[in-house]
Amino acid sequence: MAAPLIVDFDYTRSLGPVLSGFMTALRDRRILGIRGSDGRVHAPPVEYDPQTGDPLTELVEVGGNGGTGTVLSWSWMPDPLEGQPLSHPFAWALIRLDGADTGMLHAVDAPIDRLRTGLRVRARWADTPIGSIRDIECFEPDEPEDQPVAGPEHTSKDVRASEPDDREPVTMLTTPIHLEYQHTASREESRFLRGLLEGRLLGQRCPVCRQVYIPARSACPVDGVATTDEVELPDTGTITTFCIVNVPFLGQRITPPYVAAYVLLDGADIAFLHLILECPVDEVRMGMRVRAVWRPREQWGPSLENIDHFRPTGDPDAAYQTYAKHL
Image (cartoon, rainbow, N blue to C red; front, side, top):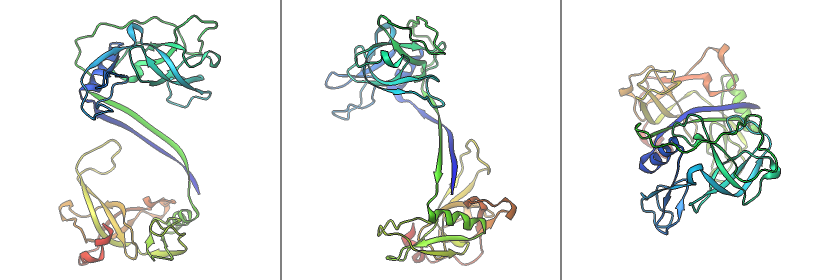
């Protein structure tokens, strides 16, 4: 079995004084590095000294007025991927900006026959910088041309560094994350997924330690041998550990607060994460006995989402010793 998987989210972080200075300078079409204890200038700036581990504070401007530097090494990108800086062929390069001692990774827009180690390049700036590494659209050759640097999107422009403005410094960064790949399931995982289509929970038992794993896996992580025996498990189990979710986030389908818990199915030796509903969050506890609530059969697919959530059975809590080794 195989299926495309897509992971899509916005990663947001606070920058701190060093990276805030770096991003704020990019908004002004300037590039900053930082001086280490040995006198070397790191660009982009690092927050802590690579030699001593101490915090660094001395930001210095690099790249001159046009963001110029030298290509240290490069790799050709003949078929750009979605979201990359350019949609036509370009090079990824390590560029040592003038005044810096380390290389910065960025795109270089130039024909492959012009690229070489030692090529002088300059930054091509975005029309409206916002305080992001993408304020540098790419780099392009900064030496006499034997042929034009002509990509279909390229319009040559001479953009000089602007004077620092009076806007607030850039203190937060949001980076869109997108990962798309094709997942191919193992034989054991495929049987587990097909079992879910029938409303069955299938695990695998290690022939050495006899532990039962669900979702199924091809080899025992304890003994390193293939799992050989298929075991059908009930849809009842015990909560081992849990978390009360109070913070809303994009795409959330359940209004907080609610509980995400690790459920150890009866007969299994590893717990898996699922929702606990139909119970006040302050009543959820370790050892609580729960049962799966399945979605209508017409909604089933080869996925654990066939189980909408778990709910309490009302049975007495499991003794701690029965799940203590599975926390």
